[in-house]
Image (cartoon, rainbow, N blue to C red; front, side, top):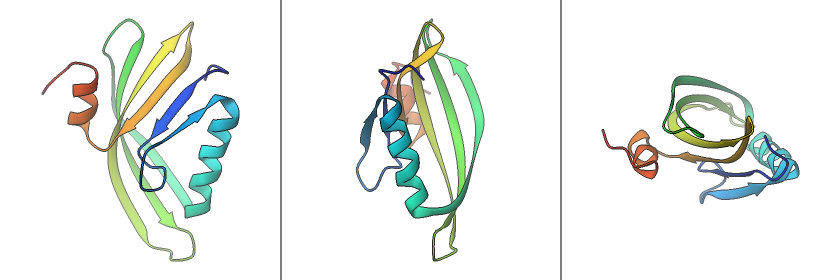
Length: 106
């Protein structure tokens, strides 16, 4: 991640939130840790959609803090890179929405 990065997560609370810089990424991880006892992410697919843009689908499994309830979800992500570092990232609730964002349709 580039020090001036921006990351917008669909997983943050109810509404997407944008986290800026390395401090923002640390806050994102702290926000997740407040809700989940444990979590696991698995990249299901990943491919280039341009010279500096990468698309991925991710499956997440989490266990709720306190409740112990297990949940599984799928989401998609788009990352823009510069000089080998992520400068912008965003997750989407669906593969279709993420593909549309990069100008592709299924």
